Amino acid sequence: MAKTKTAFFCQQCGYETPKWTGKCPSCSGWNTFVEEVVQREDKGKAATPWDDEKKENNKAHRLDDIVQINVPRMIAPDPELNRVLGGGLVPGSVTLVAGEPGIGKSTLFLQVGILWNDITTLYVSGEESAQQIKLRAERIGAKNNNLFLLTATDTATIFNEVKKVKPDMLIIDSIQTLESPYVESAAGSVSQVRECAAELQRFAKTSGIPVFIIGHITKEGSIAGPKVLEHIVDTVLQFEGDRHYAYRILRTLKNRFGPTSELGIYEMVAQGMRPVINPSEILLSQHEEPLSGIAIASTMEGLRPMMIEVQALVTQAVYGNPQRTVSGLDPRRLQLLLAVLEKRGGFHFGQKDVFVNIAGGLKIEDPSIELALVCALLSSYEDKALPKNICLVGEIGLSGEIRAINRIDQRIAEADKLGMDVIFIPKANMKGLDLKNFKIEIKTVNKVEDVYKMLF
Image (cartoon, rainbow, N blue to C red; front, side, top):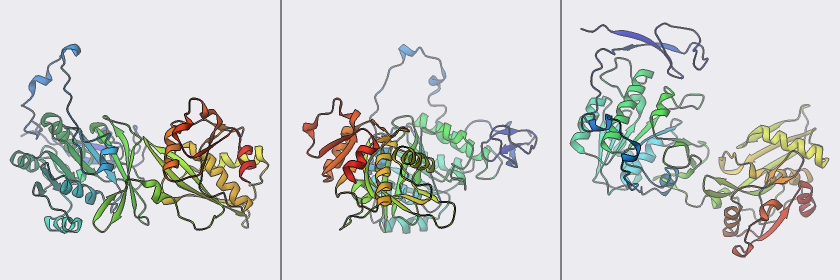
């Protein structure tokens, strides 16, 4: 009998060492090493029964001799999922979906499996019983005779059922509950997560069956398990949102088959997750009368233009040190814009409390919303509401100039579609712009003071 070996693994990055150490040399984390049992001598053959089917792939081939096969993508019934995957699901791909507990990961992908009724789906759950999943399926309301449910955590059992069912798609919920018979550590440990993910990856690549893997996140917000988990898979999706809001965001962090900046928006309803096709309408508040401190900005998330509402509140500081509270935006960008307004515009924000919020619970990284943020700050500072149905887009430089942005035509078209009357754009973006395609009035600005003179 082979001797059982133990090793120490870092629970944050997966670094392996034969002896315990206080500080991880890879991620510099303290007290993160845990001893786990490994049996490398008895590991033997991998658990996937598809490994022997394509041994010819283990031979070296000349690059010019490889024949490219254009495999069509599998189009899901969920348009938002197709968007974040880059236009559909690629056969043989491995997709990791991570999110906070209770955010709706299991509900979303059970709903995908039920609504995708023209393919056979195997849903493997290691966290819930069959009765619990049945209750959730009845709440969704749809029916699918091609959806099979398996409650198991052993990878050998899962692959045996795969051979019997022969599904077109496999959903694993979740990777932290799986156990491989070739690793003798507890479920959820670094070695188990790494081995189970490697087995699923080999299965997907050799069989051509796409696999969705649902994973947990740590209290810091990163994906639980070793970092190699994100390297193994083809696509990493982050499912995020505030529990106090009904909207959820599916964001692409890694995608080998498409862009990495796409996002899909869902609304949590009683029947499950409802895809939001036009998010601009829900992200704009409908005010009967103009209010100060509110400006409309046009932003881009991947290839999708969106209209969002930027809210600002500027009040006199009463507690000594002025407060700077930001929600949905990088606080350092607010400090930068306040310094520009102080230096170039002469506005005294040094003794003012400033609060900024992006409506809808979104987190925006697009710098083109800076012009709308500046106008919202000035509107609250002067206590004057901006004119109704105007949109602002532009990046602010340190000297107060308004810099050009990308994809200006798509932003203008989105504002035009939503019924905006005027849009302010950087003057540098007028080059090559065909104004005949838009009904909306377009005004160009070069500096922040130009916008201030026009609006205030």
